[in-house]
Length: 103
Image (cartoon, rainbow, N blue to C red; front, top):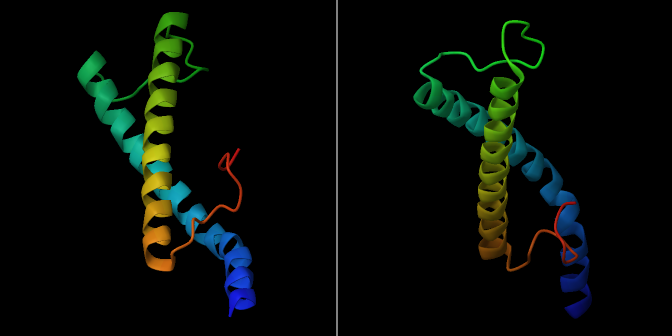
């Protein structure tokens, strides 16, 4: 029985990969929507500046990038953590075999 349990624990990270991919895609979509709404509130514009937008200043471009990066990191971490907790509750095993996480 103990061998079977160890084997199942080793296979869980591999089984979690497609779930992790789906969670990553979902978090990216949610972060993009949150960023668009945040930018609209901050600057009262529908579109955030792009790095290659000739008519925007450096400050606007870097501000948008910083806000977008912060929102993306928070949303991704929240979605990843929630997904891992659901997996742990349903299987009894944390989905990542080592401490330290994804990176």
